[in-house]
Image: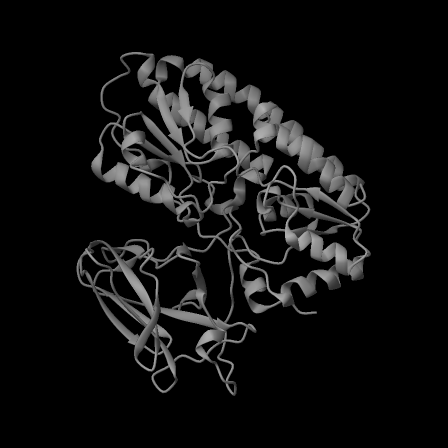
Length: 460
């Protein structure tokens, strides 16, 4: 069975607006004591890597609790102010961690003594891009009652190239509007579906249409014009603003994105404009992960040059352990009897699929918040039957309790196919209480969970 359009679109998506390590702010005065050797990280893997490189010389804090993932996380209170009391914030400049992007921008704007470091710096050529192809056409000839619309889940496209920019999902954005050059226009298109996956016609002569407005309290530095499914943003003056998209039913607003306005910059003509939509899960790849760990080392050497030798040595030792992970995946790939497995979770392993030459079929895209449809699950059933699969993989963080449960999708597949076994596969975005108690970091999650699970699923 053919997978749904939304599944295909999201099977390799993720924006990475790679700002670079040059996002670092002024560092202020030299260290005056151990209390100043402190910083924050954006989620579990970065925290683990930073602790190994820093050793005892620099202390890092991960604001995300055990049992939670950094994706979709929202801070309680003024986390930017807490981070600003330290020396550094290490994060990924990607909308999959939009809270971290927001914090980094606030730190860069309002604080002089804390540095921000984007671990995607220098990885642009290695990121898996998104090529959506032609903008999906409308499915005419159907009735679209209001209750059938997926109002809390729609896609946005750059109509200059027909590339997908991102999507709105349940009160937050994945991706968003690209930079708008001053005195130029960026047209953005909306793709809205109904509960059967059909593309709802949007237009001035249709029942439904789309519009946008400047978010409350944001500067009106763009002119906005809407034409059916299309919204055009024209830069009036440089700066940063945010807008709210609206879905209209015969001219009346029935849904908007005010819960999280889409922020973007109006830039000088000639500056870089739209960025690609990339898969952000680079940290699952032990080879690209070494580059990210190298960025952590460089950040610490810049922050604390007196302990540069320690950071260099710690980096070299840890990268050696990452080489062991790479070798384990290579051996697994060589031993595998099959090259296709089913992963009942969001599509978070494209980087290791590409590097080690196997394929994980998934029902949804990169977002763990995305809801799978009946068609998505039926597609997995077809894959299982075609390849005679008896073991499925799953992300423990997509289960009600990651230590005791499996996701409902695994239960459905077991009920409707010959699958009789399920194994964990973790993208290492977080940790469980048991793993934390056992002091398992990124290395252990890869060697103790992912490699054995993939061996079982791929008959290695």
